Image (cartoon, rainbow, N blue to C red; front, side):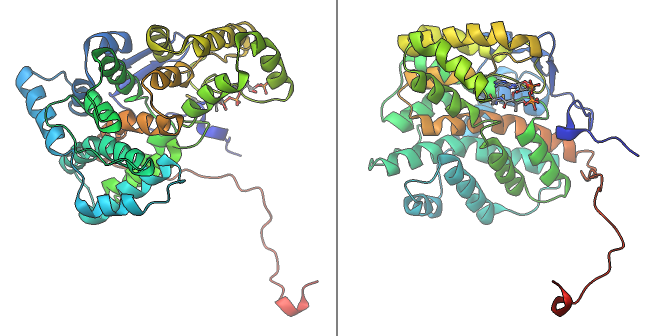
Length: 372
Ligand SMILES: CC(C)(COP(=O)(O)OP(=O)(O)OC[C@H]1O[C@@H](n2cnc3c(N)ncnc32)[C@H](O)[C@@H]1OP(=O)(O)O)[C@@H](O)C(=O)NCCC(=O)NCCS
């Protein structure tokens, strides 16, 4: 009998040259460059180019790529009308999923080539911040703001959200957040994107499916769960009692644990630096105390702090409402989804694993009138 590997843990389904994770050593590389160096020296635009084209751009290439993103920021009027009609209480990830799907109906012929995937990738990468900011403003009875033609990807998002250009330190923190979220090998949402892509369906269908996978609290949704848990704890004095109660009740600590990292996630270390620099002091103190307990009591079973633990404190410092945090994850991860889709379909093979059947066979069909 063949073995089953639940959750596909440690199953390699293909080879890739996009991202390397050393889960035991706590190291991460995009196209061979360490995440620490990229977070310190690069920008989201440059990292996206690196992920898609496999090399750092020249000045001219980066200028052209960034201008192309800027040109694609604006939403078609049909989508603005749709966003206006979306239920105000819908989860922003649900609205983002619908908006990308709608764009696919305007442009959704099948993408069987890498060039086509990257062309559509530019359009959607550029538009996700506009979709999120527009939705946020509409649901708060504020006039949507047209995307800027001069601001960076990170600064433009904050500008469209708040209606004013962000301070430099917010722009940098958002840029770093997008870099840290841009890519992470074959996680649940990237596998979903690749599975849809492997059927030679269109780019938009694959990305819509990825957004759906990212929304879940065990994946991207954990960024919202982590900050809510710090708020629920309320003060540093209450952390210990809250932690041991959570363990007793077998509740997971949000922003802790990872299928691949069995040690501190290197992205979390970078987010922590920004959380300390910009974040609310009380939330930071609660998170630091909880972190110490996680490291002391859970790291022996390989549970440590992950990327979603500190990021919410950084977004909260930029006056972004919690319900938008997972959409910021998507704003970054669109770069990785697109890179993997383009790489995979360039040597495509349908993704179709098996389930080991444990039911019965050969049962006799009983007509309905004879069933008890
Ligand atoms: C990410 C996650 C789904 C990975 O899960 P996994 O690889 O399937 O690991 P398991 O759920 O099998 O956990 C293994 C052990 O660690 C424990 N564990 C894992 N994550 C934990 C957490 N966040 N808090 C407390 N215990 C945790 C499990 O209870 C289990 O303990 P046991 O062996 O005593 O039963 C899981 O760690 C989790 O739910 N984390 C919280 C959500 C989160 O932050 N997600 C973002 C990931 S980037």
